[in-house]
Length: 266
Image 1 (cartoon, one colour):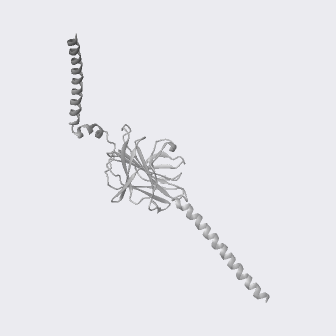
Image 2 (image 1 turned 180 degrees about the vertical axis):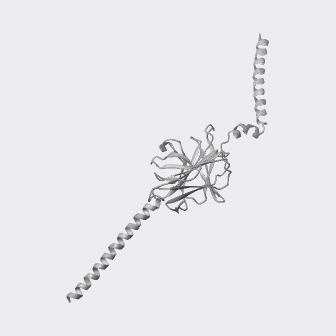
Image 3 (image 1 turned 180 degrees about the horizontal axis):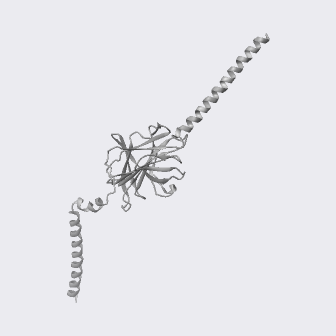
């Protein structure tokens, strides 16, 4: 009986020893695996690699008293987010807004605020962002000079310029004109009206190359007095100046007449 008990006890201890030995051996084998092999799955999901934009819409937006530029970049809508993307604007541009547009109401747009980095290369400021909700990035900025000028006979030309950072499938260049304007360029496309009723015209550039300046223009005849955003302001300013000068002249003439009358009385 005692021998049987010892045999059973030894058998149990042997099983435990065998299990412990196998566990230690497996642990030792895993510790001998090179670190790079274990890191491969994590590296394959690295979202820090910059994904180039596929298409861009450059919109030269005419406001009441000036112009601003808006650049919206598009990635493949089926791409898995998050994704790091880059978008460029002319170096030194004053940024009005940068964010991740939803394509719907602006209340759903994600404002990057400080969630971006910027570097300058040549004539471009390059903004790097991480898209987490929508595969689009948009940046709006002020222009260095007025892009529209009169050509004579009531005709005006507005110039649009943009340099994409990488090769694109398509680049749309669009601007809005005053309601009632007549464009004169051959091959120009109509892109509907803005929410304010301004007609939008421009072009689609296919396969534009990266780091090359793309320039085009829209020639148009606007309603009288609507050639440039500053025309009305300038006209109003001239009216104020003219009225002021007339008031001063009237006061001066009145003072001269008053002096002469006093001299006659004396």
